[in-house]
Image (cartoon, rainbow, N blue to C red; front, side, top):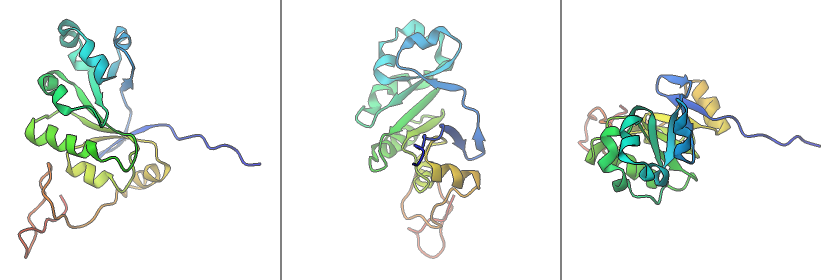
Length: 177
């Protein structure tokens, strides 16, 4: 009889390596009663009154699901301490577009976090589209990141939010950043 596998705990990874996560996910603004840094769903964040948003701006983040429009948080970006974009499944890439929009069109400079089904082969592209933090649970991704092997291809053919070094020979070929 085999034991049931329990999913690994979520670990936070950045290009500097793994680090402690001082943010907690919460479903409602009641979590702001403590001194936690809280990531709220979009609906809960938008229900907050302006005074609460302003008073706790340094410890409020928001998570956008793939179907939620990035435009709903654009007026709040200067006061958001973190934006998390959800990847509920590996084949749902809408959050890549949102990351690009936040970084390039809306000039968001704060932390941009990928959460959900974050796989090792997606991380290099996530970095290029503007993500800088990753909540990782996938065992293969955790192992590769612990071994300092985030993967990726050596050349890039498309521009990105994070500029690549100019390539040689062909103007359209980009080298890794």
